[in-house]
Length: 594
Image 1 (cartoon, rainbow, N blue to C red):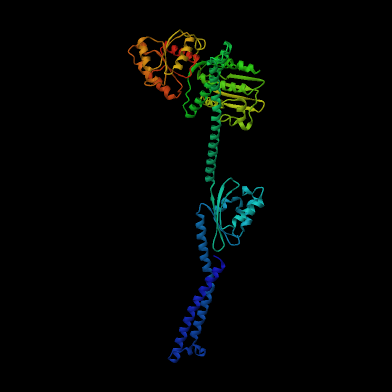
Image 2: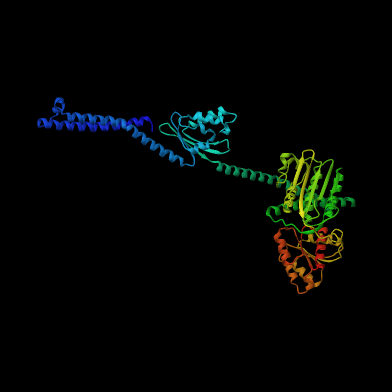
């Protein structure tokens, strides 16, 4: 409470006492006059000579009482002011937010401890009576305000201008990274009441939401670029396939035998590229859905590595590159998924050759410890190519992204190879690492731990198959033709039918060594046909080797086919090597009674 208020209270108390004293004195005088004259008159009040000493004594006492009342009101009022001040301080200390009051001259009147905690660097200056500008300057000098660093006077002028507004709402960042919302209001008597609310958590959530939004927008943009690139990657080989096929099929365009072979080779190359693109997309889909399943097969590590060497040695030589194998063991049998390991190596070697114009590509394979199982095997592919800029390394494993969009235009490709390779390595319990320096080369490496496997006497590639009677079931005529051509070239006898019903009729008429059944057919699909064959009365025919063929690579379909009794599930388009490998595995299992 201010001094003017206390002064007014003293005067009100003194005035009330004076009024009471005057009334008492008048009554006393009237009574005294009655005692002397037997009557009451106002003239007797003025007769000072006849006033008794008792009245004079009463007058003196009343006068002292009035004067004492005036001076005694001061401590009473101060006690009341202290009580009210303590109540106010107690009330504002219960607030979770900072609270402050400045008077009309911008001097600090009162604040709570939370206010001092928020402005801890300025706390020594936050004392009653100090001005707002002095407190701000002290905070600036002690690094309290992040935004003020390097532009102190400009920041101070702006903050004072904000402070003089009657309805301020701003956000402020402190030196420790916290964020405040400042709300200030002017009272009717010209004072300023302010709140300081810590909004650091809200800001953190806001920033996370913004990052998520930016990430989603970046992913959307990357997907758009990816779809555009996929359009190119799919249409380019299709264009080659259609173009060369039309040339071969056009009777007006006569080509010699050598040109026919070249056209056919171009069609085969384009089809292989198209299959690779589709497989990449399907693999990525499996990975994103968490449906990637790894096989557990025995394989010879050296055979896997030398196949990769054979696959790319000619291509590297055509570019004038040295393709070097550095392997510290001659042979070791392991158990794992050789197809996926080979896929990762092929991706890494393919990239190394693609992005290297001179120098060498090194495939390094180190078996770290053969004395224990599982065995740790480190694979590394090194090149002397264009390398990767430091700021792009973190993006190379992201789906739908490439280190540099211009690289795609220069070298082609879907940009999915490293994404898929990284996910495959993680699924195998490792991590795909990269070291690179721009214009000097790159090194991609990963380490996986695999249990020791059981050696096989004959590899799938070296084994030969006996001639077999094969029944192919597919409702698309061109697929039957392709299967017949491939299988007859391997020495097998082929019968083709276009429905499951006809296949059951053929099974009753003749015996077959192998059935290749399309999954998606009208009326009765491949899984239903498989179940029907396994239920045949003839036990020999019921246990015929049967493989499902389908472009649908979802794990649910594979499980359904297996449950119906299928021996294997081959993706379309199938090739002779894949068919041969599966047949050898299947025949070996049957021979061993598995």
